[in-house]
Structures are given as structure tokens and as C-alpha cells.
Length: 568
Image (cartoon, rainbow, N blue to C red):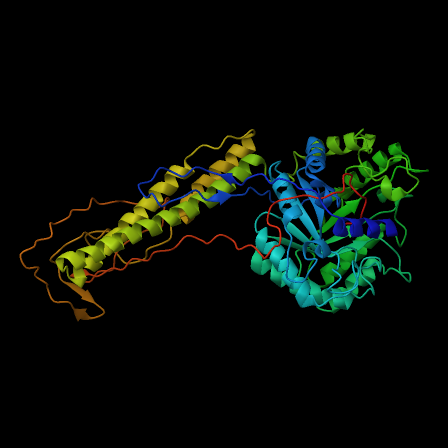
């Protein structure tokens, strides 16, 4: 990797950036409810990446630093090829330029823009800030890196699909001095931090360049071997690799140090350490188009690699580097990796990529389509809505029970029964709300989307309402309110209470049957007499907390053209 990539990363991190407006969250209107306190729950759509080799995306490290207009144009061109996943760089030195202070402006804008197009994100967490060590490639305290990745994963829970831990640590250009043992140490801390913040996120280790061992690089096979020896097993979900080699096609490149041979050797090590089932992702592959490297050769090499990778055992997703040239015609190869020229003229490789994505889309879906994502969002919203309504109804009945006791001297027994009745009604109300919301049709453009949405609807009602547990009496599943019944609580019989001069009218509560497929059963524990059930109110989940930031509005960057960079 050349110094140009380091310069590009420095520019992205250090230069000022323009403002980007952030698209609002998708808010689904609430189901009509008598509880006025219930409010819409904001839901962001996220695509989940399929780890098969038919997932074909684009790696573009420039996306983080683009201004609003250029970001939109770039993502529109990416989407036009049929791409539904991108690999981006999150420069630690830019997001946390000062220790403990996070600037989410540009990343918020990027995540929002990708989501609005149904594009999933794999993020590379790299680039040492000056306060933590030598800028870009210096060593650092693993705890400091863990704090950073935790902040990112917490803020973008269920929005960023996967995280790569550093970029090409087997090259001194990106991690100096090269040290697989040190890498394993911060990998383990980062894995634990990410999984604690977002259990569904994938953690991808290695991120290794195809190279031989020199004074400035360590071959990837040796790096993986030493990484495993340092205890890395169990601390990643996949490995990633960058099989660049400009002079030969991947399928014909079978000498001992070729990328294809290195993949085979790495897989043997993975099997040795019990990781044979884990995939190898290709998070960068490309070919320049300058000098002796022609656009026709770029198209042929990309096609050869994608087709050969389909026959590779343990093959994961592919990300082609990159979207657009930074300077078409420049003698610097780093300026000419794009599928498009600087003026957005498509190169032949752009059509090759679009054709291959269309060809393989029938055998594996790169991401959930929009209909599936809508169904997932609907399920999350119904769950949160039902929980918030349940808590509101239970609070209402508890307040009513307290008022009755205060105004009329109603016994503790009667008050408890009233609250128990409220619990049964609340559970039924939550189930009805869940059923009503889940029954709302989701418009999709494909049969697969419709099927996914239907599947999500059928499972939503099983998990959307918190359980109120108890054992039913022999005569009724739902308790009824009574002003005069005696009850037994924890072995002590409460005396019957007579209310002088004031009679609380008997209230008949219609029996409510909650279908087994809609919500967990709600019942009351009873002895041979009437027992005193209790109500559990489950509050709605709190919104995710945002880390401290000097700037909280969504914004983008200044670089108006993508810069070729190895995940930097």
C-alpha cells in the first residue's frame, strides 16, 4: 500500500468538512389508542448482510468525508449497480480527535444516507488519534480503543451491520510496529465491547493485505498464525482479506505467495483452531486503470475474481474497491481504482459488476430487501408500542386503585384485586394493539418481501407483550373485581372489610381471551378460595444513549471526490 492512502486518511481526518443534513428517522404512526400518553417510536431500517459469496458490495473509504451532494450522488451511482452493501472507513482520529469527545456529524449523515437507500454498512474502525499514539498507525492502549468501538456500536446499534477491527495491521503503513500479539489483545477487548453494545453486529478480524514478509510487511498467513497463538480464537465472527495483485488474475495466480494460496493456508489455520465454519470476507479487491493497466483489464480481473470466489470453500462477501477515480488519467495507480471516471463516466467494470450482481442475486441475497427491512422495523415498533401501552394502562389502574382506597377506604384485598384485573386487561390490550399493528400490510415489490413481512407479522405477537405470569383458578382465567371477597396472601388471611355508609358498586369485567398465538397467557394464582394476584408492569425500553459530542447535528465532509484508500 502506498503513502498516498495514508495521506488520504490524514486529509479526511484533519481537514474541515461541510454541513450535511440528516434525513429524519422513519416513524410509523401509532395504532389508535385510548391512552393519550402513547407516542410513536422512531425506527431506523437496517439491512442484515448475508455472509455468502454472492453478496457483492463496494468498498469506498471516501464516503465518510464527502459533502452532502457528493455523498448522495455517489450512493445513487452505487445503488444503480444493484449494490446493497458498502464497506466504509470510520477514522478513530476524526470521530474522537480529543479523548472522550465524539463528533458524530459525518457518520450520522453517512448512516442515514445509506439507510434511506436500503444499503447496509460494514465499518472499518481504524486510524490512531494523536492523543492515543502516533497518528494513523501508532500503537495505543487497548482499553482506549475498546471505549471508542463501544461508543460507535452503542450509537449505531442495529444500524451498522459489521465492524472490521483495524485495517491491514500486517503492514507498517497502518500499524507500526507490526505485532500480531498486540493486535490480538485489542481485538479481544474490541470484540467484547461491540457484542455488549450490539450483540447482532458481526466482528471481523484480520483485515489483512496480500503481501510477502519484508521490512514493512508481514505475510498474512504468519500474522494469522501468531494472532491465534496469542488467543484470538473465539473473538471474531469472520476474517477478512485483501487479495490485490495487479499483474495476474486471481484464478491463475497459484504460486506459493499468491493471494489464492494464502487464502488456502489461512483456512487451514482456521480449521486447526476450530474456526472452519467461519467465512473469509474479501473487503477490498480491485484493479487500477492507468499506465499499462487498462479499463478492459480491470473489467476482466474483477469478473475473474468474483466468478472464482464462488467456487472457493468458506467464501464470504466481496467488496470491490472503489466507486470513482480521484484523478482519472493520473500516473498514480491509487487515483484510478474507480468503477467510474472522475466525471462519472462508467468504465466497463461498472457494467460487469452490475451484471454479476444480477446474475447471482437469484442464488443469494446480499441483504434483506426493503420489504423485509420494513417487516423487521414493524416488529420492533409493535413490541415497543405494546410495552408502552401496557405500562400506561397498568399505571392508570394502579392510580385508580389508590384513589378508591383513599376516597372510600376500600380494603387492601379489594385494591389488590382491582390491580390484578387491570393487569389482565392490560395484557389483553397490549395483545390487541400488537395484533392490530402487525396486521397492517407492508407494501413490497417482490414476493420474497411479502413472505418476509408475513413471517415477521406472525411472530411479532408472540414477543411483543410482556408476560404477566400466574396459575389460573379452576373456574376462570381472568380475575374479576369484587368489593367483598376474602383473600389469602402469603399464608395470612385478610379480614373482610365493611365500608360504612358507602357501597362500591360491583363491577363486572368482561372476560377477555387472549389467543395463544397473540400473546403469552395471563392468569391469576388461586387457592380454593380467591387469591390475591399481582401485576407486573414492564416499562418500555429506553432510547439508546448518545455519547458526548461537541456537534450533534448530522453533517458530512469536504472531500468532493472519493480517495483511493485501503479502508482508511
